[in-house]
Each structure stands twice: as structure tokens, then as C-alpha cells.
Image 1 (cartoon, rainbow, N blue to C red):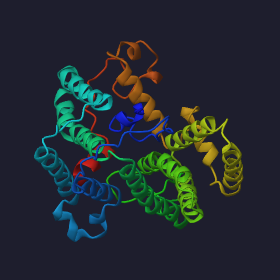
Image 2 (cartoon, rainbow, N blue to C red):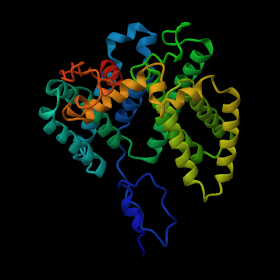
Image 3 (cartoon, rainbow, N blue to C red):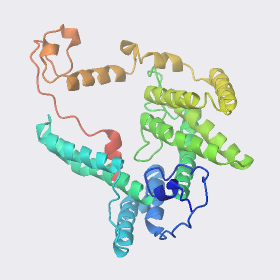
Length: 362
């Protein structure tokens, strides 16, 4: 009796890939142990709290620290489930070892950083939390069914985020709105990871490929119509944020899908949808959008000054000392250089807004 080799790799890192047709009779598969649903349910609840922030809508929930409770239940439930069955807490995989190596490298190089105290605080705060959630996802989302459920949950959670962005743009809810502003940016969603319009565009772009994957999996007309509506809403919301990084990420995702579909029968639908989408965007594109995108290359033309600030920060971080700036003209000196060219030690930069909001929610 012939045994298909793919039957032996159900628990490998390619468990999510569809199995090819068997080449012969198969031995009956050994029944797999049914894992506890508590850790996965807690992970989904943690995701809901992190993205939608119900404590911002209902202030009475804020003292409960829902994100911390959900994460604690997920990790504790996973520990209990693995311990009582005598299984290891850490499933060895390439991605997990890379994450642990990154933690070890960060810990080793933190004393050599420009601001050791801030680096250590960030490492044992937000960074460790992110690695813990990454590890928990790799352990809990271990079947195709759970992967599809998590992708469906993220797609559903992206709808209120995108709808809020579109509503803020239509209603004129802008940051520091006023006649003196040359460029008006919408207010983001009031949640830890999406309060800034750039962060909101980033989150929608991260969820978008999962929504497209569900579109390929589901064949029902109703499910596909709902997913197409959610995808279109996400794209419109990314444009409404006026985020340059969001536009570049969206264009990269679109180019990647077109490249993958170039030899598949679905390419006709993909290029058709692209044409319809571009036509609609050209008709309803916000005024000044292309001008704002032009500042990606023309940094000096950004009226908000954010592109110039990022360039100055990159120059400072890329230079191990300030000699290159001090030898240049005074116009090229960063903010840390004085008029005499003598570099002053700048104040430590605070933790990014995204990381700070994520840590406060947990």
C-alpha cells in the first residue's frame, strides 16, 4: 500500500497549502488531538479590542484593560492546553527562531545604541509584547479553518475603520482644519493603532491581502459581493487618508497580484477590475492628491514639512557622527547642528506614536 508523502507534512509550516491529489491508496490518517478553543477565541477578542477600541466608545470599559485580559487568557490557555497534554510550549519553526534571534540581537546591541535607556525600555515594553503576540499567533492559528476565521474577522474589522475614514473625509473632519492649512488630513479612527491617518492606511493595507485571499477561497456570489465591497471600501479609505506610504504600499500590493495572475485565467477579471477602479478614482479623486504624492520625489515641495523632517531624521540616523553634516553648507545641516557647524547632542526621540498607543491599550 502506497503512502502519500504529503500526509506526513500536515503539521509542517506548509499546513495551510492545499494538498495535491493523492497518487495512490492512502493509509488512514491518525486522529489529531482536538486543541482547546479558548486561546484562539481570546486572540480574536484581543484583535477586536486592539483595532476597534471599545473602551474609547464606552469609557466604563477602560478600567477593565480588555486587551491585557484577552492576551493573558490567550497565553494562559495555551500554556494550560500544551502542559496538560505534555506538548512543548514552543513549536520550532524558521519564523519563530528568526524572531527570537532578532530579540537576542536587539538585547545584545541595546547598550551600544545612542540612547541605551530608551532602547532597553522599548525592547522590554512594546517590542516584547509584539513578539509575544507573533509567537501566540503562530501557535494558535494552526489550521486552515482558523486561518480563514481570523482573516474573516480582520476583514470585518477593517470595514468600520475604512468607513470612518471615508465619513471623516466627506464630513470634513480634518486634523487642525482651517483656512490656513494647505493640506488637510482626516482624523483617524480612535483606536491605538489607527488614530493617525498614516497608521490607518497602514492597517488597511495589511488587511487587504487577507480580504483578497478570502475572495479567491469563497465561491458563493453573496460572499464574493460582500468581500468585493469591503476591498473597494478599503482602497477608497487609503486614498482618503492622503498617506504617501499608504499609496506606495497599495500600489505594491496591486502590482504583486497582477504579476501573480499574469498567466492565470483570473487575469482578465483582475485587469478589468483594475481598469474600473482607476476610472472611478480618476473621476472622484480628491483635489490635490497627485500634488501631494509628488512630494515623494520633490521633498522640498511638501507644504506640511513632514517629508523634510523625515529626510533630516534619516540623515541623522544614517550618520555615525556629524562630520558629514558639519562639512557641508549650513543649509544642509540637520536640526542638531548649530550655525557654527558644531553638532550638539539632540534630545532622545520619543517612542513612535503607534508603539506608544499600542502599549497603552494593552
